[in-house]
Amino acid sequence: MASPITFSGLGSGLDTQAIISALLKVEALPINQLEDRKALEQKKLSLIGTLKGYVNSLKDKAKALATSGEFMSYKASISDANAATVSASATATAGAHTMVIQSLAAADRWAFDSVTDPDTDLATADGQTVSFTYDGQNYSVSLTAAASSLTEIASAINGATNGAVTASVVQTSDIGTGTYELVLAGDQAGTSYRISNIASTVAGLTIDGTGPTGNTAGSSNNIIVGTNAIAVIDGQTISRASNDFANVIPGVSITALEADPLTTHSITIEGDKTAIKSKIQSFVDTYNELASFVNKQNKYDEEEGPSGELFGDPILRTVMSTVRGALFNQTASQVAGDTTGYGTLRLLGIELQNDGTLKVNNTKLDDKLDEDPAAFADLFVDTDGFDNGGAAVGTPAYYVDQTTDTGLMDDLVREIDRVVKSYQASNGTFSKGLFDARTDALNSNIKLYNQQIDAKERRLEVYEQQLVAKFSALESAMAQLQSQQAYFGGIG
Image: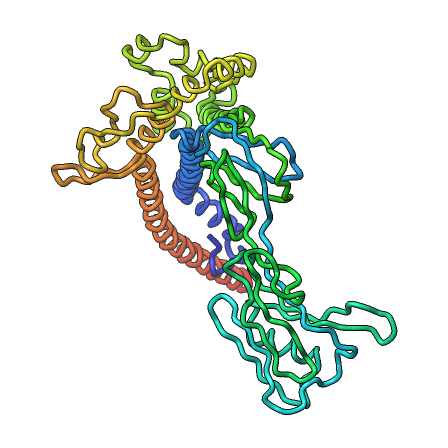
């Protein structure tokens, strides 16, 4: 601490300011020690947060492998990629299918009779209209004689329909003065979105509004008839307002691109081994990040000492024993029930290394996945459902599955929850989860250190004031003595 008073040392010949500073430094050593301890607790707090992040990430990766829908990945292909795009979700089932695309969906489109100048007014009086019906709504656009050019009519229609029907002016010929047509197009495709009852009372704008019969235009002004997309999928005729045939085959998305009533396309749905392996590798990578973090914190060197601030912290042992127990401690009944060689991660090619990390033996994993995909998935996936025996939510028993087949990933998710989630016990007591309890303990330590530091700093301030007062009195006394000595020396 810096003293508010400075001393010249002229009276005593001593550097009193340096002496005070040295004494204060000695007195402040306990404060520095407390600051170091507080800083260590703060580092631990940060590292606990990092550890929690690794655990949560591992839990998320486990969830992505815990159910059949999440674990299984499928890919879809079609014999002609120009005919349609196909993709499969996790809810798909492997199999072969057929598809004939008879027609594509089309939006209804009308063109009024042509005019020679898009900027010439066409109405002979105010109040002449262009009217039509679309998607159950009647539109009647009233015009004035002074604002009834083709361009102005298109603008008025667009304003009235707010995008449901789009009006545009198209130049259909550039011979001579050229010809222009007002075109109306429905926003959506399909027979349910045809433009009907189309008529014009504008003197210079004519149209034959006769509607179609079936999918055949009734008027030459109906340049495209709004039609549905029609496909025959596995022998069943399917009609859609768009070219999207999603989930006709469960879990499969199909978008028709090209109609050809005479061609049958083959669609194949099969397991996507690459995607499944990618999920497994992602889980292994996340597990290894956690294991490497714990290894680094627990490493000890005889010369340099512990390498991590959490060295020896029980939370590291609890986390890793929980995770490894769920993944590698299969019960005797589970091992005995494994008659096909799919009962452990090691048998599937996921091996535990000496340093606690995992390594994927891709050759073994490929062979096991090819040999029996269902048995492979069964090790990871809970196929019989979770049954906690009616235990109360949040209690330790709640996280124990009473069924025989659990699935490692489902086990891991529940084991992580069991140790990290807080819960209310049946006797009313509240039990904090692993990370909450450790965080609270560290925060409590930091709070205690802050209190101790504040108290010692207040005492140090008082001690400084005392030193300043003592040395000030010493300087004053020495100055008086020197003054007296000079006086008496002058008399002699």
